[in-house]
Structures are given as C-alpha cells and as structure tokens.
Length: 125
Image 1: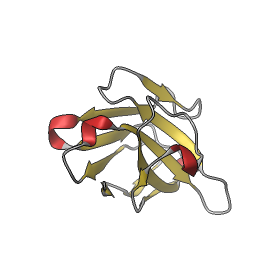
Image 2: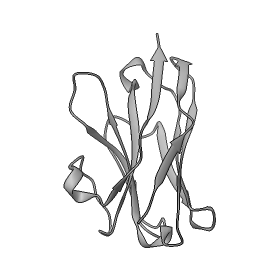
Image 3: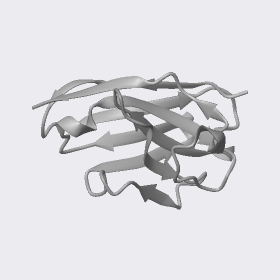
C-alpha cells in the first residue's frame, strides 16, 4: 500500500510560481512512475505531467509544456511539480498519482494504482 500526500498549493497571481510536492509512504516509491493531474470545477480531469521510475522519461500536456517541470527524488520518496508563468486557467485541484506502468500520459483513473487527496491551486488574474 502506498499513501500519497500533496502539498504546496495555494493562491498566486497570474505570472507567479508554485511548487507542488507529493510525498509517498513506504519504501517502494522508486517502483512507481508518477503523474500529476488536475481537475477544475465543472471540467474533466486533465493529465498534466508524468515521470518514469528513474526520472529518465518525462511527458507533459501541451497546455503546460515550457511552463511546468516535473521531477522526483527517490531518496526522499517525493515527486515535484514546479509551476511557472501560471495562468488563471491553471486553477484546479492538483493530484499526484502512482502507477506500476512504465509511464502514463492519461487522466484515466484506471491507469493509476494510487492517488493523493489533492491540493488546490488558484491563480488570480
């Protein structure tokens, strides 16, 4: 069993930055690829970024490419999402998720084994 806890969300002005963290319990963090997903009110869940177990492979949604950066520190059991040049349309609840698959680029819950509880990111204009 893996428990994921996100942190780092908050309120920021457009153009600002935030860094989200996702800390996992247990000693098997490096066995999972990690993903960040988001869901805005009234909208479907959206894939944001994914990183493979070793961090060698990374994928981004087109909407965040060049502005967001995903990373991980397996020694700290933590994945990160650095978000720069934030826009009001980035406002959403952000979730991290873990998957035994090599790498997932999908918002489908069935592709992931574990989910965090989510952290709110609000970008004001």
